Amino acid sequence: MNEIGSSIRAARRLPPLLSLRAFEAAAAHLSFQRAALELSVTPSAISHQVRALEDTLGQPLFRRLTRQLALTPAGQRLFDDLRMGFDVLEAGIDKLRRPTKSPQVTLTTNTAFAARWLLPRMAAFREACPGIELRLHASDTLVDLARGDADIAVRSGSGNWPGLTVRELMPERYAPMCSPMLGLKRMADLPKHQLIHCSWQPQALAPALWPRWFKEAGIAQPHIRTAKAPSGLSFSDETHAMLAALGGHGVALLSLTLSAEELRNGALVQPFGPALDTGSYFLATANGREREPAVRAVWEWIGSQAGGPAAPGPNTEAGATKREKASRRRL
Image 1 (tube, rainbow, N blue to C red):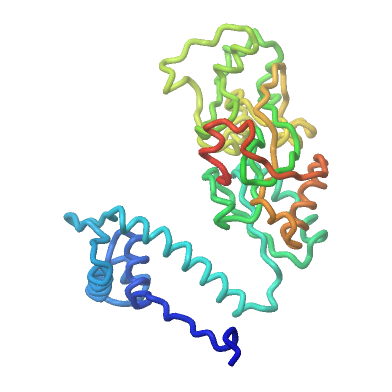
Image 2 (image 1 turned 135 degrees about the vertical axis):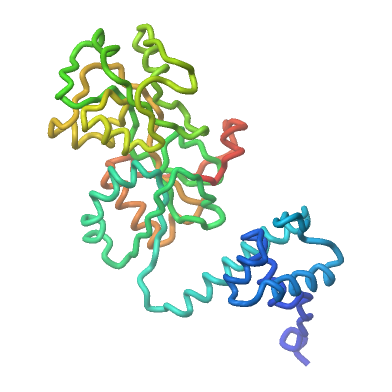
């Protein structure tokens, strides 16, 4: 008898799939009612399935508070594993359902880069990569590339991100910009104009903020009410700050890369320096993903548009700071 061909596989020791689906939905929403809406059943059915799963596992998965659910440590571990497993299962089923669909590549980047740099180039992308469906995830929230939340990221910073293959696209610098209608030409006249502020993410390498600009310019910063509530206009999105500057509402520190067209056509002017170095824009993907045909095609197209160095390379742990290691693979 061929022992290899006649080997018997042991049955999987898994709870019922209905209980696992009910728990995963309830854990995602922290609500039996919203989980019931997702799965088109009643809240009592969700509660029954979760209770049966807890009995099977011999430990509670939720803390049932007044009008609220909270995961126990065991529940959080199970939820993380189930979410990943269901994501993989869903992706596999989706591939079987759509075998003839064009390959999809999800690209994540911040909202300003998406609006100012990528979207104007979409016609060129469709011409260069007609067989690829590009899904754009425009958000300042970091995602986990290793987990597959996105295929490629374009982010600014140092590029020293362990676990990722990176490619430098272009350096990024910020300078004071405003509408020519303000007539601002001399640095000495800056205090007469309203400053436009823009928020930066906590993980930013070297944020282009007005206090830093005044320090590098070697001049005293105009009086502000408090450090948390500076005078002028404040925006959470750089695109909105640019629109305010275009409208003549003040002077903003804007990206020389993302404002290039407005500087060329005269809609914005850079009356003086200095320009602040904030790092560079980089392409990034999980190690090995850059060899996949569709990912590689998008990777090369973005690189050709930016004119950056051609050779990508994996990062290692060597020389990585504690802060960089803590955010590895999340871009």
